Image 1 (cartoon, helix red, strand yellow):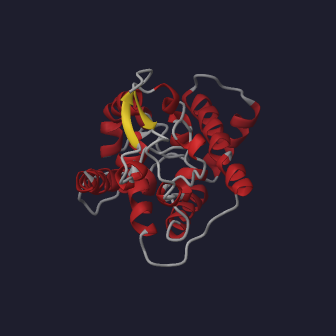
Image 2 (cartoon, one colour):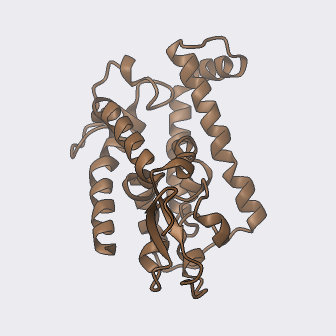
Amino acid sequence: MSRLFLAIRTVALLTLGPVVIAGSFWTPELKGALLNCPFPFPFIMCKACPVFCTFGAIRTGLFWGILGTNFLLGRVFCGFCCPAGVAQDLLYKLPVKKLLPSLSVDRWLKRLKYFLALVVILLVLEATGIWQGIPFATSLWFWLIGHASTFRNSLIALVAFSLLLSVFLSRDWCRYLCPLGAWISPFNKYSVVELAFDSDKCRQCEQCPRKCSSGIRSASERWSSLECLRCLECYTNCKESAVNFRLKGVEE
């Protein structure tokens, strides 16, 4: 099973990775996306974009695919298909001393992505004309228009720094900064299939908190947490089969 999961992650990294970074498949040409989007903020103005890029072409299908898998399994896109997440997982495997933030610091930092998710929503409403005149969003959008290259370079630098940090801290971008993860996190509570934990089978080996890519340390919190990335490390590393799948509301 672990080999199958690795294969899925590898395919996601090699296919979606170039699309998100350069906007194209297997070509050196930059066509939109993160590196060369003509708008101040990438990924939010694709329908009005004059530049063709693969991301813009597949964004509708990608949206419905993420939505469908969320309804089925929660944040499984984060755990398996997001190229940024896969890249972070691979970098974290490098044999260096790891960082372990305190619980209070970890909880505080995790709030950042929800704030950023709200800011991005307000920018989308302003930029697309759905709801204009939002004081903070209007000022920010006009500032971004006037400083597009500076902001894009800063965003690229932030992503690069996050990847570097992921060598020492598991999934730092996913845990603290990713607005997409914040938007889809509620699906963990309402997905058709959920993770089930059998406390009678658990032998307290502590593999779950050690392997959890989201840094969730409490067993009582982990199984239904909004922060669970559905990476299924707890499932694949449990030798006692204490972690399994079940339909929501169906007791074994």
